[in-house]
Length: 606
Ligand code: AGP
Image 1 (cartoon, helix red, strand yellow):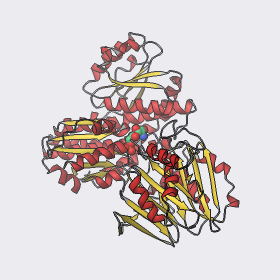
Image 2 (tube, protein in one colour):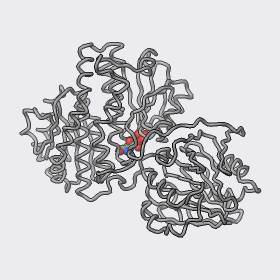
Image 3 (cartoon, rainbow, N blue to C red):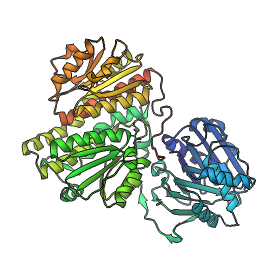
Image 4 (cartoon, helix red, strand yellow):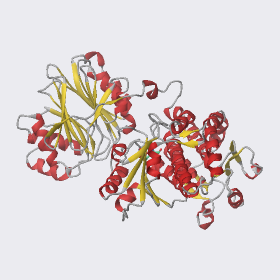
């Protein structure tokens, strides 16, 4: 995690660094800092605990017009507590070099001991400070040669960006495992953890690959890998600043919830021909004809929940046995990699370390990897043999919303592509396609009921524990709803198959422990109603997420409704109700909605 941003050019660096850091804040917001050099070789460092806004408040921009090169960092603490001493940028003992870092230097403890023996003293506890001191220790007069040496000594993961007080205008660094791009502007150069922080600043950028070392100086740059200077392809930025701005919304999360109808239109465009009622997509045509007999989905968090829905779709619509594994467990478990299995990696950021490392294992062992990714140019997108983008635009809120629905919609398209090729009955295929076209409008209609959802959320805001219940397609929705509640409200919640509750956890139910059941038009509707009765007869309160034509509304203490359709497509509406429920409750409780405590959006450390 952590976001790093660098700039060198003819403009004032400070406002640019602060803008870049604000855009990277989703990667961590424990502390932030900048370091800049002036043309006269003066060094300016400022750091603050907390968000970038705290740093902004400490900086007097008018006094910094001479500073045109700088690096900045927004931190998600891994090594060392959240203190100003541990805040990046970190400096060498002689104060000549400064560095920002994203990742973990695995052998930092041995290196720190070695440097202490050499007489270096440390002001903080971070692995990054070790990199700064080590750089000074290895320095023999040439920044780039020292960087080369440094990268043979430190063990990854890292994206590092240095500046040298004696060389104003110069930025240099290296990356393995953590993302880094170079933005190419007119006489101005940017380095960032995420190309989206460059939207509106440059039109083109290059993505650095693992093992790349770079140096920007004299209004030019070079990239070297394994001692060879090479040219990385330039990529264009297509998003506009509109995608990075709140507009009239109070929070990015709410904006992103409201974008979901449009996002699903994006997901379906170029894949589904609604006129001809068929799927048209070259990537899918290619994958479907590979003769895969099984699917293994690997992902974390919300993306894992999308994978669980993917399993439901692939098994029910395409008859393909599908396994879903949390990426951390995949990497350290026993892996059976074979050519008959399609390995699908799901990731909004495309940078989640656990998923990325798992993907590398499958690639190395000859498995066919397929990415469902939101961020073009991200590591998972680049390493996958094939894949589909989710086209959800930038997702800023730490709590994933539109990326989830886009992932689920992508799975539905994939399952239909496989199903049409193999076993799916044609009438069923057609009815789902017809229904999919209506989802965006249904979502937009559902969003009009947000006030009703807010009322129920407010009513339950004082409860400390919740169960989220569902079965079949609705179990992953329960799991996702429960995760949203936890991360946004800091309330405890657990998701269960409604049928499983009676095997032990029902003991927790009393009048202070409400449950939310997702009970649409599923074939298991009446079984779910029995679970409602089991909870109610133990004094538990029950909120139903049900269709507007449900005839059993009176069994619930409260209910929230959506328009009935097919179980395969109702999930989109159900999850949006749960997203809004968590959003409104968090708002009632005064939580920091876009940046919940302890979290970061992109988890780039294992
Ligand atoms: C959920 O709201 C979180 N943002 C988190 O669970 C996230 O889905 C997980 O860390 C995986 O991230 P990815 O999709 O970027 O790989």
